[in-house]
Amino acid sequence: MIQTSTPALHAARDTLPVALSVAPFGLVIGATATQLGVPPLADAAAAATVFAGAAHFAPLTMFAAGAGVLAALGTAVLINARLLLYSAALEPRFRDQPRWFRWCGPALLIDQTYLMVLGRDDLDEPSRFRRYWLVAGGLLMASWVAMVGLGGVLGPLLPAGSPLDAAAVVVLAGMLGPRLAAVRPALIALTALLVAAAGAPLPGGVGLVAGIVAGIAAGALLDRMPS
Image 1 (cartoon, helix red, strand yellow):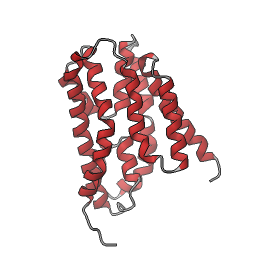
Image 2 (image 1 turned 45 degrees about the vertical axis):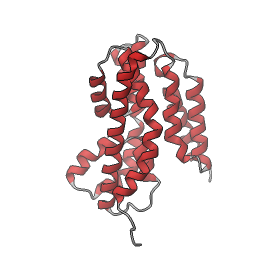
Image 3 (image 1 turned 120 degrees about the vertical axis):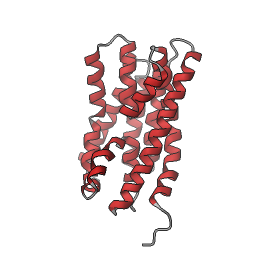
Image 4 (image 1 turned 120 degrees about the horizontal axis):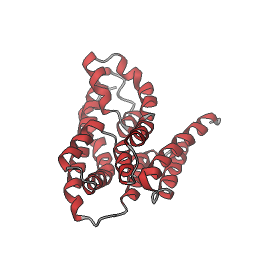
């Protein structure tokens, strides 16, 4: 099949709507961190290092609720445990890649990049996958860090005690929305969104964690059902 455009161009086009969908969550994280006394520059650096919105957001809200360091870190680890499943699914795509990519590429593995490559059928060639992955992940990371930093700058302008936990539902909607065309992904998405929305008033990011866990559980149950 003749390729009419490059993987980098595909990646840029695919990334724009995804970056827009998670931008509100980045702003919320930056604003939350600033209200908790975290300098915007430090929080932006953390956004690049962690590069996982839920795992970044939940510890912040848990600290605000008075939780200890171990509890906050344990929650972050629990949230990111799903990345192990993503890694196993993408292992064939990384198997024939250069060593430098096998070491550095996984740093860009998040829900959005996983779903983006899952939705394409033209990345079987290792070099095409590599270019797509680096451009998509790089653009997402750059936009994410920018939004977190902007949220940190705008944070002092917000009233203290704003209901920021509710905005966590935004990132779930943005992440899962593109998958709603099929029945099973739609059921998983709706389960996660409803649970996260119901738990939004709970402190410490509990609603977000519950939504993620509910979505994973719904996916596991549906996988056991016949097609």
